[in-house]
Length: 78
Image (cartoon, rainbow, N blue to C red; front, side):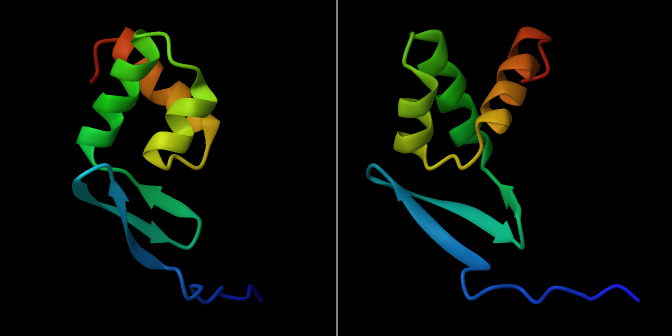
């Protein structure tokens, strides 16, 4: 029988990006980023800003997520 994980105390939180209050919702290990964060991350990468710096500034937890957004941009999905 599988055990169901209980959400941690940080299951729901809001992170401040610059002067804007933007919601980043965490459900277990899944994070949902607003479209504004995704677009800003793509613009920063296109401007030549290193991945790690983009992730630190925008609070992106996973480098694979940033790569996925760049693929969406290249394929004209975003």
